[in-house]
Length: 265
Ligand SMILES: O=C(O)CCC(=O)C(=O)O
Image 1 (tube, protein in one colour):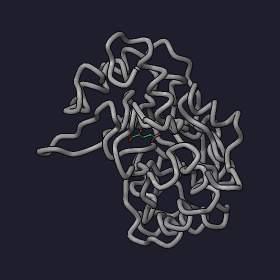
Image 2 (cartoon, helix red, strand yellow; image 1 turned 180 degrees about the vertical axis):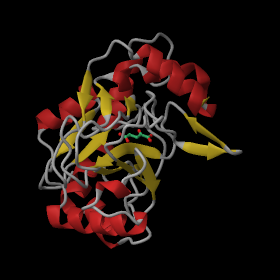
Image 3 (tube, rainbow, N blue to C red; image 1 turned 30 degrees about the horizontal axis):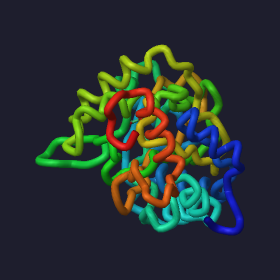
């Protein structure tokens, strides 16, 4: 573990129990502004002219990389990755991946269902397994200030603890993403909901099994947020001889301890 820590012990515990933590000021507001400018240009829309904001949602991978590589690779975030995933157990990202820009619009966005994000692609289908193959975290970097009316992502608090019990019987082969999302969504329906609000430059670090959903924009300023995975160097280890479990693994083990005959329990 590094000498200087990004997350307090309370925040790490919050990640284990709630499934996410917000790293405030993980990158600078200037880098966020640079990123927004690049995206506005790529979208061919005018930030000063709402008449050009014709769709409720635009998804795009920015063609420019500079501000996005900088945003997701601050030392603050790298130390937080070490704290949550384990030193040497993750790959640094080249950028922030796919952006989901949401606009105030009368038309419904049509993409607001509860789900978890998929981990890996096999034969043209997305899958997730108990060991969260390939995916260490879901990250939500905020590139604009996001208040409660500005389409913050909805996060079901503690929902990551509902997923291991669904995945365990499927073994290493895992489950197809649509079926898992449907079952995880049903299992977590009673969980409280938190909103991923914050300032441009904040980053939510989420357990890969957190059930989440988008929502329509009810405010006035377009919302800029990406949702990249942090890729892992290997699957989660649920039975470590040295006992040096990461918080991601601790959460899965805690969830499985309620299941009889489960792997790693
Ligand atoms: O836009 C959002 O708030 C979340 C989007 C999302 O979860 C997704 O597209 O998978």
